[in-house]
Length: 335
Ligand code: PEP
Ligand code: MN
Image (cartoon, rainbow, N blue to C red; front, side, top):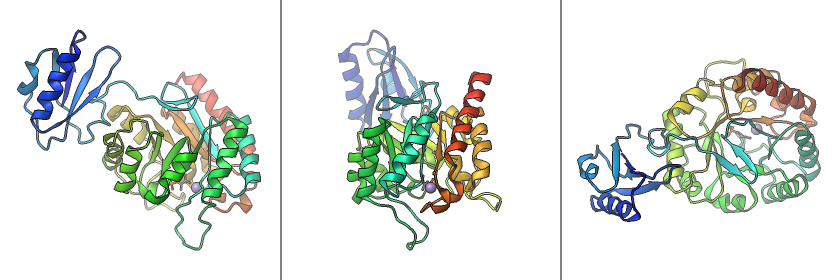
């Protein structure tokens, strides 16, 4: 339930409503808005009786929140959330480009790719230092050394960096180095990691689970918001289906659906959805046309020798062409 206050409501009125909510055993979450404040009622198991609050001083209206992912829902917050990563914004009517290799392999590799993608319009550099791999024998990432390389890339290019936090043990270390912290598809329902992300002051990039419904995905985001961190970007990266022509199936209908259901920004990762280079450009065009707030693309200057996901990594020239194509779609359709 959401209690919307009158514009002229006083701090005492707000305090009175908070006390009334808490005295019934619920949690009050004030949400400052542009014009007036609203107060969310949380922790209720069943429906809350609106008449408890509708007569209180300064209350304009009481709106029931019907979605299970309360704080993530548009009912709770009608205005779009804009996520800020240093001087880069996501969800403010712009298209945010994130690009870089799957994994940080060396300083030379990371710097070379960062320079290429920056020249071709990237706003944020990506690269895994801790890699969730299907096989324990595959390259697992450089760990802290990878994080250090990422911070040198940031220093040298002034691009913010995103990298994955795979578990509670290394979250703090990742938090120290990253500007945006990724929670990967395999960890979308790692609830202790989600709670840890909720306590973080850094923005979170939450990827959709490999077999997650949109409800499950939005509930995962709810854990982070519930923990106190509202800076969340959702990332559609394809789900597992029966097909063999791509690694996963990119669910582009998730974009308008999520934008209707939630105020959180949503970007698309066509690289992990496709698993193969030739599909990345067409899927990127489609993602932009469908209204995604950004793209995350894997790029490698020498994909044949990449230690992970080489087959889906674009050559720098391909990334540059992709950037130009999506810009022309934005201009043509005024998206
Ligand atoms: C990645 O971004 O490198 C990654 C492992 O993605 P996902 O969690 O979507 O598989
Ligand atoms: Mn990858």
